[in-house]
Image (cartoon, one colour):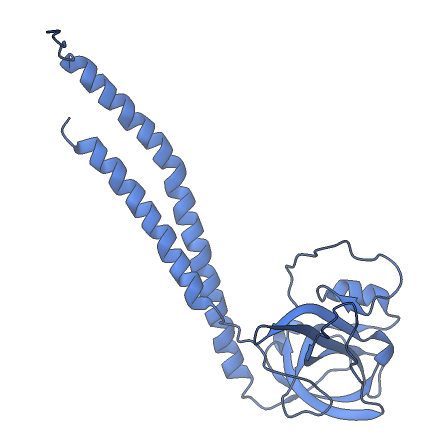
Length: 246
């Protein structure tokens, strides 16, 4: 019967040393990656929570009259504002792919010329359901004449993804995302750098079930804990194989 030679102790130690070095190199890549992703998700949760606290606080303060000159958007953010002016129906846009209770639709964005000035501000008048045939556009009537309304000032989303190239000339009544700079370049008047979410009780709007800033913050925390768990597991696995007896 063939006899198997026992592996020399020195060779076994060398093999374990090589495995430990290789594991350390892999861990040096995985550990910072997992921790970085966990911290990124954690910061997103903290940011959303902080915005919700700010909204809850500022929105209950006394309403501010909307300035007719270019405003400091950080100062007005999440404050309730009062506006008086006239809607510009010619430059109303519909923001596509907005969901409400799992139903597809649009956000209706209409510029309002502030009374006594040429300054305009974009008003989100709410969500409007899309027709069964998505090739058709819904009818979004615009109130005529001078009106007074109120709403919450919010900053536009800075990061978005367009599914198709956006037109560089002409006017399109349907947009994929609301881009303030694109809007400014397309209209012949000054425009405030924020958006007014129309109050639910204000006239001339549609469905106004505005999402909370801290929406899905708990999900980000869950993701963060998962990434931290991956980091801890990777470290534990490497330590186990490092110290275990052959």
